[in-house]
Image 1: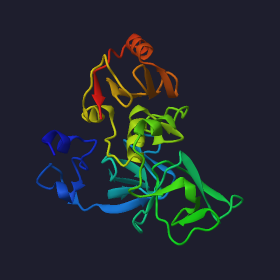
Image 2: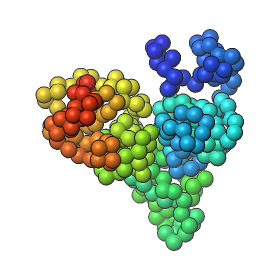
Image 3: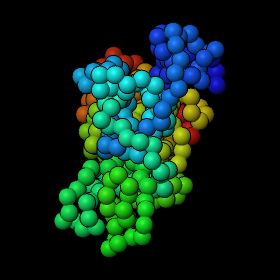
Image 4: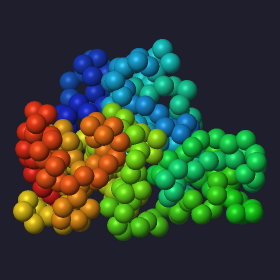
Length: 282
C-alpha cells in the first residue's frame, strides 16, 4: 500500500487523539486502541463524517457487513467498514455482535426477511443487493432462514462466491433508484455507489469514491468507448451501456438514469464541472 493510501483519512482509522493499534508506528496519535469487529444489523447504516445523526453521510454499510469499532461514545461508534475501508461514525444501535460468518448474499435488487416462512408474516427490511446473511437450516416452502434477519425467499439469495459476471447488467437493475449522497443501497445511491454495488455483486472489489475508482482498470479510448467503460468527471462517474449511452446516478435527474454520453458531457460542462477527466476499461 502506498504512503498516500495509508494517510488518506477516508480509509485510515486514525485521528489526532486516537488510532487503531495496527497503525502504531505508521501515524501519529495520542493513543492507540484495538478494533472490535461488529456486524451491521439494520438494512443499511449511514457512515457519517461526525458523531451526529445530522452529519453528512459519507457511505453506507449494509446488513451483515462488518465494521471495526475503535471508540463508542454518545451512541455513536467510530470505526472502519471492512468491505470498502471507509472510516466514519455509525449509530451504535445499528451494530451487533460478530456472530457467524456470512454464507449468502442478497442477489435481488431488494428483498424482505419474514418472521415466518410465509409472505403473510411480519417483514424486516428491505435488504438491498449485496447485503450479507448467514443461512442456517434447510429451506422451507421456498424460504431459507437467515440468522438475525428472518425467512428470505430462496431465489433472492446466492452463496458467497457464486456471482454473475456482467456488472453493467447489474447496474441497469438500479435504473430509476433515487439519488442519495453517500448511498449505496437500492433505496438510494450516488454515482460511485452505483459502480461499487454493481462490481460487488460480481464478486469484484471496488473502492468508494470516484477519485479512488479512477485508478481501476486501464485507460480506454474516449473516441471508441464500449459497454462497461467508465467515464470520469471531477467528482462524478458513469458506466457506458454501449458506445453512445451512459448510465449514472446523478443529481440532475435525482436518480439512476440513462442519457446519450454527448448530451451528458454538454450538460455537465454547462454546469461548471468541466469535461471528462478520463475513461477507464475494467
